[in-house]
Image (cartoon, rainbow, N blue to C red; front, side, top):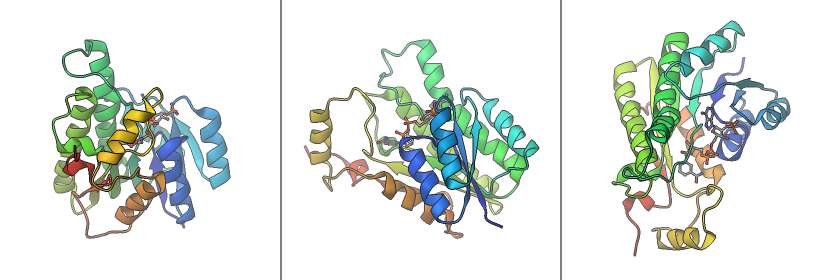
Length: 235
Ligand SMILES: NC(=O)c1ccc[n+]([C@@H]2O[C@H](COP(=O)([O-])OP(=O)(O)OC[C@H]3O[C@@H](n4cnc5c(N)ncnc54)[C@H](OP(=O)(O)O)[C@@H]3O)[C@@H](O)[C@H]2O)c1
C-alpha cells in the first residue's frame, strides 16, 4: 500500500506543487487547506487524495487536525509543514495582535503538528518549510523571520530528541513566488544580486522535499534551495 503524506496549505502555489510531485512519486496525498476549499478539493480529486480543512493558528491546531485524521484512518507517514503567512512587519512596528498571529501560523502551529505527528503516528518523517532568511538578522520582516528561525531550531531539536523513530528536516527556499503587492522591479533587483542570479522554482522545492523523504540517513538537515541567497547578496 502506498505511503501517505500530509501537506499543510497545499491548495495553491508551492504546496500544490509538493502535492503533485508526491502523488507522482506514488504517495497518497492529504491536501490540507484553510480557505481554498474549491482548489483543495479539485486537487485532491485529481490526485486521488483527500482534502482536509483546518485553521492552523494556535497550539491546539496539531491535536485537532491529527484527531480528525485518526478518526478517518488517515494517519500519514510524512508531514510537510508548508502553510505559512508572510508578514512584512519589522520588530519595531508590529502590533501585539499581528505578532501573535504571525508567530502562531509560522511557528506554534507547525510545532504543534510535529508534536501531534509524534504522538499519533510514532514514526516517520517531518519536513518543515523554512526560509533562507533564517541565515541572517532580517531587519525588514523581523517577526516572520523570527518564527522561521524558531521552527529551524525546533527542526534540529526534534531531529535529535525523536531519533531514531522520526526524521526531521527543513527546506529553506529563496525567492520562488512573491506575495501579492510586491514591486516586480525590487524582486528583479534582489534576484540579480543573488549569487546564482535566478528565481527558484516550485519544482525545485518539491525535488528537495522528495530527496529528504527518500533519505533514511538524513535528519536535522536544512537544505537551502535559494540560489545562494543565504550566503549574502552581492551588492
Ligand atoms: N513563496 C516563496 O517564494 C517562499 C520563499 C521562502 C520560503 N517560503 C516558504 O515556503 C512555504 C510555501 O510558500 P508559499 O508562498 O507557497 O505559501 P503561502 O502561499 O504564503 O501560504 C500557503 C498556504 O498557507 C495556508 N495558510 C495560511 N494561514 C493559515 C492558517 N492560519 N491556517 C491554515 N492554513 C493557513 C493558506 O491556505 P488556504 O489558501 O487554504 O487558506 C495558504 O494558501 C511557506 O512555509 C513559506 O514560508 C516561500
